[in-house]
Amino acid sequence: MRSEEEINTAIEQYADTVKRICIVHLKNHADTEDIFQTVFLKYALSSAVFENTEHEKAWFIRVTINACRDLLRSFFRSRTVPLDVLADQEAPSFADNREVLDAVLSLPAKYRDVVYLHYYEGYTAPQIGEILGKKTNTVYTLLTRAREQLRRLLGGDEDE
Image (cartoon, rainbow, N blue to C red; front, side, top):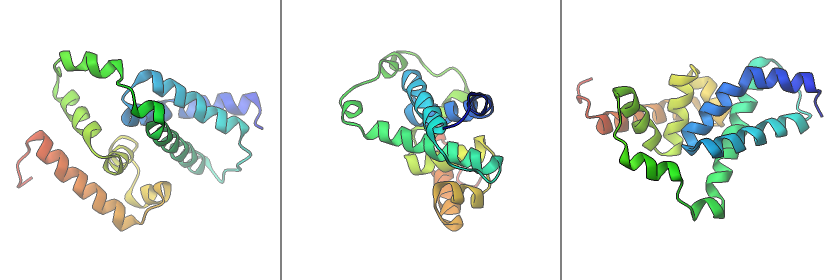
């Protein structure tokens, strides 16, 4: 079990990353808060020893993604419709950034993960491969396919 000081330091350091990953996966602020608490509780109870800060950050990313997937697979989750979805159906998107975000969020999870880690967190393909447990060439393939899907969704030129 970790000390209160270690936990507070981790929250200060990784809170934004954990919340962004949750929003990308869950698209729901209430579920994001639940997973946020779950991730940091797991950290508090964990006895894992980290080699460096990058190793620790990778641990947080992996645990967050797994917790989000567990929630999305749960029986209760598959039988409900979030209120956010109903509210969003009435409101049009306001800017190109919102359109891009919506397109990224509409991608399948395997593409969404690599796009998020590459473009929003700044990881390279080999680093993403380590985090997600995939080969580097697989990550490159997923990024290429994600870009193609985004180009189709956003109506980009085929020559770009």
